[in-house]
Image 1 (cartoon, one colour):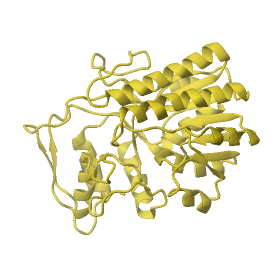
Image 2: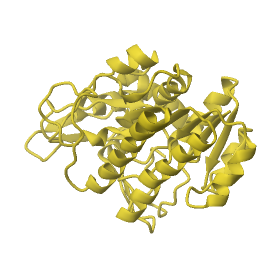
Image 3: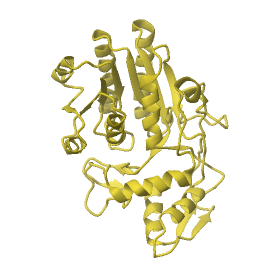
Image 4: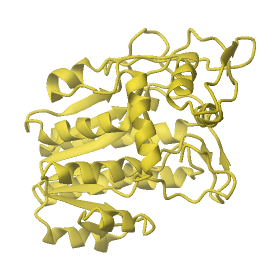
Amino acid sequence: MIAIVGATGYIGRYLCPYLLKKSCDILALGRSKNAQKFFEEHKVPFLYFDLNDKKCLDDLEKYPITAMVDLSACLAEHETSVEDFFRVNTIGVYKLLDYCVKHGIKRFVMTSSHKLYNDVNDRAVISEEAPVSFKGDHSPYIISKIAAENFVTYYHKDFGISGIVLRLTGVHGYGEILGFLEKDGTYKKSTFELFFEKALQGEPIEVWGDQSVKRDHVYVKDVLTAIECAVNAPESVSGVYNVASGRAYSQMEEAQILAEVLATEKGVSKVTNLPEKPGLTRGYLYSIEKAKKELGWKPSYADMKTMYEDYKKEWLSKEYHNYHYIKPGQEPKSL
């Protein structure tokens, strides 16, 4: 049985039905009662689970768990205290690893973040060999994830846990929050969400800044197959792996593709670049060769148009909708 911690989050809501369709024996664990109905509708075995409640860990003992996937995280994009970053992102991983040792669970898969490379600017393609680093407002989040990754390494070296860390680049897909969400529901939309809304209306889209700056994103459905490969990897496989598309696009290219894919009878948005206005200052492209070689994984949606065509289908169906509270009138149309 595969236990999926943090299953009520964005990736978890995609992952659980996906694994179930693959005839995997799974147990979804999460603390969002709002999202619990989703698992009931998809006939996914679900158990309320709070990492800070010892009773929840004790309740797992009745299940024949052979692998654990940890998706739980306090995100930098949400208003979060430093204490919460470490209580969930770091101490939570420690508790799960300790549980695995005590109950003979050898496979542990944790999702981490490409933000650990936040201050890497000295190479064209970033591999797992690049030093972890941090800079800027997201540093408390990044430091909490660095510590969590170190716990995985520690439990592999000292206790033989086959720990796999998947460093995800920006994950795109329907149901994802890309802007900044405050605790009271106030929401600041991301550039992508603004592009999305303009494209739906056929309105002109302005792209600011230097378009030689490009970024590598990954589609949520490629993340699912990466996790599947990690769970099924030989016990001898462990370590850190980049999960990205291996291709980078500028915001100009992204806006043009969105304009085409989301066009309605209102017309296709005209996209123009205003290089004199402030735009992205840092791009990134990730090597995924290690994941291809050792996990047997490769993305199916590396082409951005292919990705957004599927994104549109999921957006129209609304099956994997978001459960966060956003103040009425501030919700992005991409949700």
